[in-house]
Image (cartoon, rainbow, N blue to C red; front, side):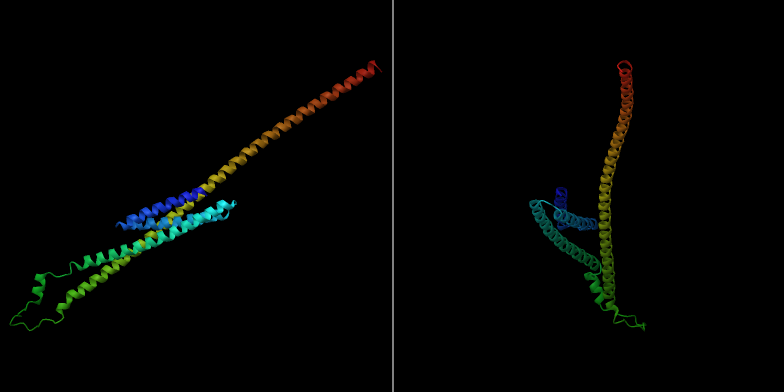
Length: 238
């Protein structure tokens, strides 16, 4: 149980360090996925520690473990809230930067503005007149580009969410493999102990069989010697 408590403390410190990096402006997808996976691992650690605390026999240790579980849960809730807030701020900042970069090339310069609104004299032999909706073409292009940028940002956001899920699943699979390795190591130790016990039992059985054979030989030798003594007594003293 102490190992789980130490693991929970290390996970808390690691998540706090990652949140500090996120707070300083590092909003990469790898960092977000790492924080999500760390929070999921911390949640599993808290559940395991809580389960072991409930099975504790000594009352004092159980109460101490329950207090630690409550502390872990409060820290986890606070870290989760901070992560969601920082993640939302990072997404808003990315969205604003994306809109700003997409709107930058669309803003006309002063010369373009003067040239756009300068009076144009059509050729004398021209039958066509200028369209009254020509001035709205840049606005339509700007709207289309903003829609395209918004769709691109939504796609990137969905991709980041999927990557976070994949990272969390990979971390969970890794934890399961570690648990299975520990179970297999324990099974191996028990099998070795059983094999050693069986080997000792075989040695004891062999020793008993040899001892039984020796006792049988001693019995027959003693019986023959006794009968021989009886014969001598009967022969010479009878």
